[in-house]
Image (cartoon, rainbow, N blue to C red; front, side, top):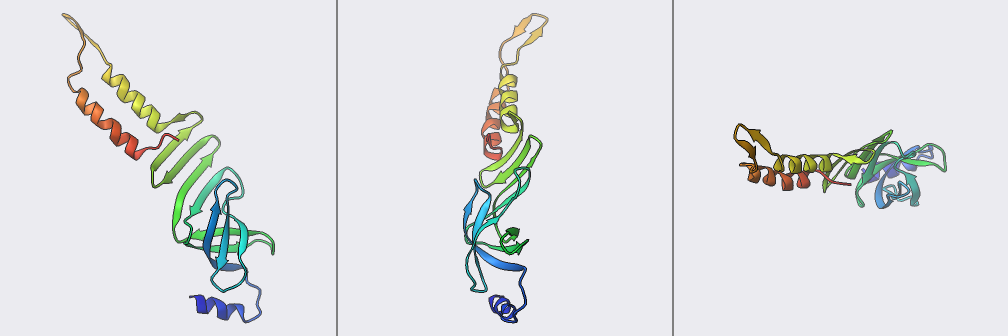
Length: 157
């Protein structure tokens, strides 16, 4: 593939996209530094995402990406061979996936905290019977066993 790209580059035609290796990622600024496989100069600060809302796909360092030139000075990463994380933000709602798990968040509420609070409330349940209150939940160990599973699947932030 590298030879094919170098052959295309030698024709003198203007190239609008390049296949590159990811050298580094600045997740705060949502940019990446790239090394084109055709041997040309590094591309610095190629945008991974332009705005805070929308879809953010962070490529892994060392992976391959397609880099499209919107202008001669503005490059955007549009495809990834491997990603480190996926993040989607829509007006205060956020969904994120990475190797640590999933995050589903709306404003200050997230799914992990909500589920753990639910388990806590269930474990503290009390019932009234004909002879008075029941103070012991018989299946508490089942709910306790759910907590680490929830924590393992869902991130808290």
